[in-house]
Length: 349
Image (cartoon, rainbow, N blue to C red; front, top):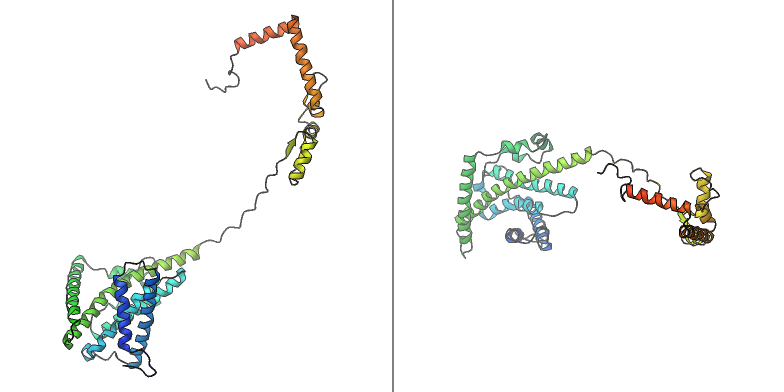
């Protein structure tokens, strides 16, 4: 069946599709690997070309029975199933693209099952044949998981029966596959082999369709969640950054910090003290003793005053000054009655 213009032959395209499926069925590489995805793209491309060629040649008709189809053409009924298999294993970067692949794979599997049902190869539930209809999908899953799938759940006995039939079918197809490798194969064996393959893929297509419908529901719920998501709150106003002030020891330090950190407000201790006196936090100093103001005005002079005061106190003690002796005895008595650490214990025992 070679087309004009040197185009690929339908049997060659089918062999390419089959070869791609065998590679994917036996590979242990992850589905996202380059080799796997390359095989998938090759299979999809060859499969779609083959399907278009089948349609152009009008190889199948809804008015025919499977007995009327030529033996070497029966295998082409598998093409939509293969393309569906490749499509659902194709990786995408965005979730929106995944939704499109799920719909495409569903359409291919459904087309395959519809053809099998039309030719009487297998009896297919009508609900599965209408999965591409949006109204049917909504009817199957109005408020959660597809109810249609729940209705298709088999009983335990039916599952056991299906499992046994599948096991027998797999063994039969494996046996026929070995016979197909012989140099001369009877037409009857070929026909039985291709029909066995189709029946195998009917089971595979049903299982994959159920998985795809579950995925369709999950994608739908995801869309709904995104649609129901409230708009993001307006960004909160940023709090003004805390700007510390620096108390410098003298005007030289103020100049240094001011030069290095021009954005930070600075003040000398004298300026700080004057500001506190002005707002009433500190009280003006008395004439007795040294004060913070004295130290701020002239630190060296204040230090000399403290040393002079300490020296006078020491001289009075050495000379047995009555007033200083009385102060010292009072302090000793106070220490005897107030052990260290007693102060401000806040009922700590």
